[in-house]
Length: 383
Image (cartoon, rainbow, N blue to C red; front, top):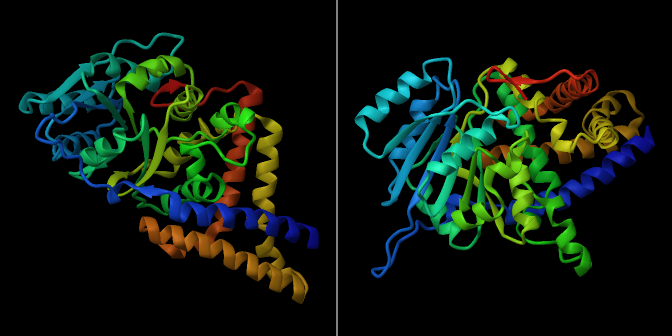
């Protein structure tokens, strides 16, 4: 028991270091000033690109929020990716009454492309903007979001925004915040922007993609940088295309900056337990590069750190119980700080062990899919 507690303490010590850094270094888009062109220049033209497949419940909110931006020079392009629900009908109605909305019908997907990269690639072909901003159909924007994003793009080739996730059902509240907890406690945001200075010079460029991260729900490019990395055609077979795009940016020596979307970018990723499970099932293992030893090691480590201390708190001796209580206190403090930042219910964080066990079950399903050759499905397609 003692050795497990020492392992948990060492891991949490690392997460404390990363979490504290990210608390101060992970920037918020809301803190930027809106872009204001001076009297001698015009505002850069922006293309807001929205891929949509079977999004009848969310597409109108997404599109109307994009159209209500206070930025003076932009277009909104929506690609209907062969939807089978009422998405097409809704978009046809909107495009018939709104001038700067362009509604495109997606071409059939080639066999060597995955769905989302193919949809985004088609959008990029039709986009006229100096800046391309790709947002998912389940995202909605505050009115000053694009003007602030343009300001950010004056200093970086690429930006990505992690939206404020709106969680409604029990399972959303239980699962979704854990994704952000992993981000805030394991990856220093500063290293996404710049190479770690503690690495020897000859290794920095080579190791830079290892620190790449992005959120495809909102990712924006300088058009020149986007074209130079090959755009979405360079990631046409990637399930986690957002991360692979950020790796391509860093491999080319270009810059990417991460922001949180509190009070600027909103999203509700999934609306039911089935959607959450199937949505994460398609990319959870892929996010580890399909590295089975690493995947199993992290699954074991998460169980030791976030589940075992709760058992020891009730079953261990007095010293072990005190040690466990301290570790659990650290976990809850980190979760509650994140809940405060993103406006989530802190009481749900008490169920952290259940969250971890849910992810353990997900991991087993992902490994089963991988080794049996079963393809995950999303929006009616195999991925």
